[in-house]
Image (cartoon, rainbow, N blue to C red; front, side):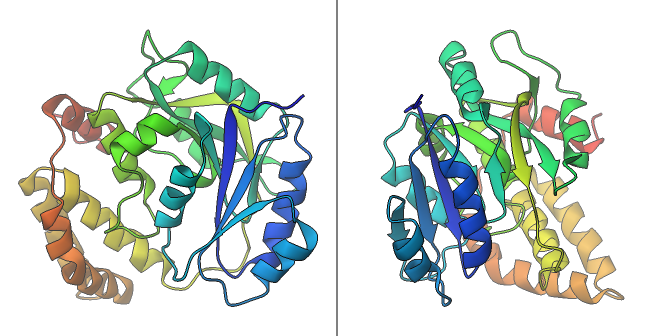
Length: 288
């Protein structure tokens, strides 16, 4: 039976083979969700493949690569009350989206669900699941699951109203570690972010490492500190990266790219409210 409460947004670029596998799984779901593919200016045969093999799938073709911001375009283009994200290497288990919709229906403050993730053909639990399930923030009386301030984008379901209220993924981050600023911004606006292990996603990441991944993640972690954390915290993280850059090529690249984006981050700087900063420090392991 079709469940029109949840739509799916897939942001993709130059991964047509993987995207085809994902779409076959999603179109077989019992919920029969509407699927929107946001193509980040692919240079392979992605658009031709979609037109030929999946004419029933809606496509939003972007003129340039917008990274994680493509998901913002997708959420705005959908009109379902809840939106699930998939990547071109992830999909949802049967029944997962209906369970997510049930949580959102029953908990009006719930803004985003971080799903349980099964990795690869062996369906190995992702180590992130234990981290999220063990979050020291614990449960809340008006939310399902366990409160968190992090998630994996390809295994997340969001309330569309909450996502747009928080502004979606941040433009300064672009891609890589983009989840943390959004979790902060949702929580700062009063929306709950929780881990619900009864909502299950499958993730089959490519074994090939992505170039500059470590440098990008370190850059974006530091930019997140400058966007949302107190000045002493951001300065300390900058000092740490500068010290590492003396002998670490990835750290040097991360520091250089951070400095290039820092003016934009400072223009968008908005520190967390005190209660949320305390929660963030608890998760950092630096609570006073």
